[in-house]
Amino acid sequence: MIRGGEPRGSKATHTQHDGAASDSERGAALSCASSGAALSCASPQRCELWGVLNVTPDSFSDGGQFLAIDAALRHARAMLAAGADVIDVGGESTRPRGVTYGAGFVAVTLDEELRRVLPVIERLAAEGARVSIDTTKAEVARRALVLGAQIVNDVSCGRDAALLRVAADAGAELVLMHSRGTGEVTATTATYDDVVADVRAELIAAVERAVAAGVERAQIWIDPGLGFAKTPAQSLVLLGCTDALVATGQRVLIGASRKAFLAEIAPDHDGALPPATERLAATLIAGVHAARAGAHAVRVHDVREMRQALLLADALRSDARAGARGGAPMIAQARAEALR
Ligand code: PMM
Image 1: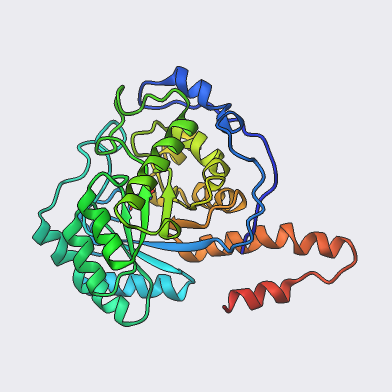
Image 2: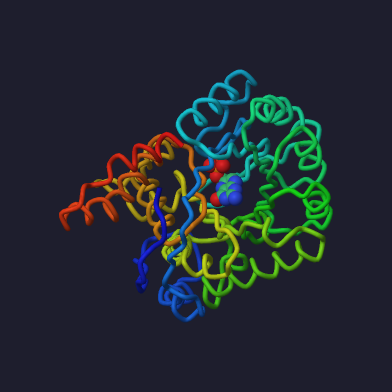
């Protein structure tokens, strides 16, 4: 799939959004270069596909669809068959409170979260899937890892030392997703001097906390947390500057799939915001951009479609140019890769 990216500058488009910080966003829009990141990302890896499995009644785009274990397993298996490398299982919605998502997520008890995720994780891991547990609770992470999950996806950015120790003790991979507060957009949480430099610095600090807790540095992923404590414009800037995170040397996960900022940036012709399930085209462009910038994985709801987009983007970069030079277009290579 997509390998590497080309050097480029970055300019963010301004867009209407729900809150404060427009001055700092204007600064941030020019900040890829100023944040000290190398803009060239010739990373050789394949961009992984992480399929989203929300076993919740209230996630913003698929809430309620996969609460029943059978439905969750069916969906996970379909994503694996479509090429997912990881299934990211979450039992508590993380949608931030605010203009976009209204009341936000409903906190669930430990018992309820365990009840939702453990049976699904146990089955998927037993079937050989690489499973990630999307949680902020140390005990949920611990029990999921015991049942065979291999990755802890922490959307609280390593705030809880107990969660970090759980990942360390299990030798698990750990995703540190940037957020502030519970991800809501307020004048406090979404004010940045330079959104790229600030998010990068807060992620690096979280990486150091995790390393101090015993997690192997090479096991740690970072994620800008698009939509979490970020206005749509700030999310756009961060997505546009994915390479600034790749330049840290940590593996980078990008989760843009179906998010509200995509609708704000690309509304319908009549100005209406497309609902979550109708943001596929923007999701695919976001994923292709992230992969080209060197992201190591994209977290998506639509695995088959994302994979198709990444394969075509990759073919356009390499095969089409080889074809123009008189070489044989490497369609066969793409097919071989598709079968991996
Ligand atoms: N987004 C959501 C939930 N978990 N985890 C990571 N690492 N990155 C994200 O961007 C992220 C996440 C919210 O989206 P969803 O409701 O579609 O799961």
